Image (cartoon, rainbow over all chains, first blue to last red; front, side, top):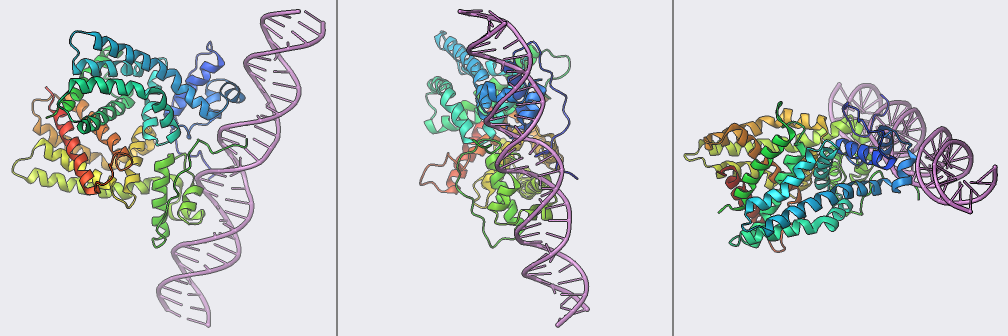
Length: 221
Length: 221
DNA sequence: GAACGCTTCAAACAGGCGTTCGAATGTTAG
DNA sequence: CTAACATTCGAACGCCTGTTTGAAGCGTTC
């Protein structure tokens, strides 16, 4: 047998990229999909450019390198996610009665709405899960350098709402919470949604379950 | 600049493989480490065999292919993990008063002891997190086909202990629990352990925090 | 219409990939 | 000692990788 692809993959539905978008956007969309499916090392620029209906050299022309393409890809989505989350957190903080539940909701709802977005956001959520699983230090650094402050703000707010919890315990539990969210979201929109349920409905259900679980876990005696 | 590696990596401490072990075992150990660090597509057989101090062709001689090497790698650890978990679960079931906490402990302690094992188990735990993040269907199928029954047994036991919880809610919450565990463990032993704390102590602390969090989350109103 | 900047394109580059092969070496059994 | 087998080894196979290059296409501005 001749040498196959680097890592075994199964046949997948072809990606359809809107031809009205610019070359840059088409590349970003196709890359998001393919990296989510096969990993950063597993998907090649030839696969990406072919799916985007774009010349191979366009990636290096518009993004400089594969690594930079990956960074831009994260930047595009995380900037939006961060803004939405911070806005929601500010709203909760300004309200008369901030509850643990409302803070958790401010954190999870923007992510879930991204996950059920048909514009490709669902791929990105899986990509995010992958980025956490990968211990690629460059990517982790990029994410924590540029978006770590969001997590810190949420942690601060939660710490105020749980004054009896030790710093140590809070640290552990927040880690569990992010793990639960990341993991659940990475499957979100793929297998979990029952037939006959709208995206909006499904998102609300998921958020409710998550907030309930996470709040109880954080409040554990 | 000449073409670099497929995906950017940073310099890592070289892997030391015990020369007294057999070729097969040296390959498995090196592969576990490298796949955990760089992913299945990101680490090449040349890197693996070089780290294992073994000829390149040895992989195909002993394992047939890269894909089969990956499977054997999972088999080696999961067989052990499954046996320990099932034994612990049986013990809990046979006890007079099975509690939610004791069931969770039976699930998490074997995994944590694997994670803090110096024999390479800590790499494997990260590998497991990666396997879940990757949506590589072949690997997922392999894992769920061969080890899905363990999760089912735990789920059944937990369901009995939470009779008032709806099937739906239980399903969601168990997903959150596995996510929390997977992601917490993938960092376990890497960054979390403070200086001057023994592995055994650290493992107990982690297990306590996790069981408390997960039990409260599962019991949420 | 010529000159300019931006984008696209086909082709090639050097190098890494998984896999295969035949010879060399070790190891065991008769 | 020798035959049979198991393992190791170096070298090569064809393929795929990220990146570069120089020419071609294009719309805008003088």
